[in-house]
Figure 1 (cartoon, one colour):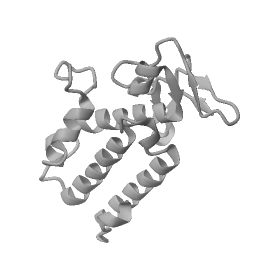
Figure 2: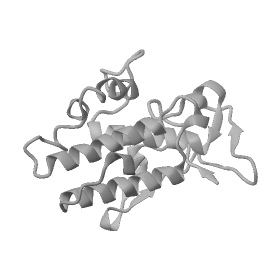
Figure 3: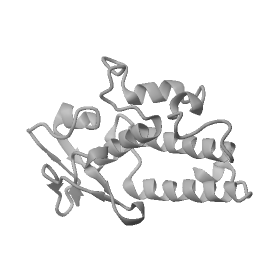
Figure 4: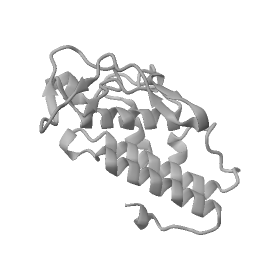
Length: 178
């Protein structure tokens, strides 16, 4: 199992048909056999994307990459970087999304991605809401409580399928996405 340890937008390259490819495996770790985590003493990752357990315990696992993926989702759909000036002290990108999301997806999503006058606005808003909820599941504080990579893929496929069906006129209930 390869743990990237530094997932962030600048390490994701888009190829043909917008297929994502990871780059910069300079600090990646290889876990062999039953070991699903390891302890690392040197600082790993990039501030803002790094899982809390990396900094606290130096513990590297696939769950840390899941955390970083969640932060990347938030950055992609808010247009805000976790290192932006507004995020300091207790106020992080994750905390900001978590506080505003229950109020309205529109408070959180980048205005360049979604506007109320957009065709199929409701379907797109629902899709973005599901993506933010997925990002929150990826960034749960406890690594053991985080969603795993296989579940992320399943949820992303359900979100995609729901959007395509809603745009096509067939509505999918939210309960089908959980």
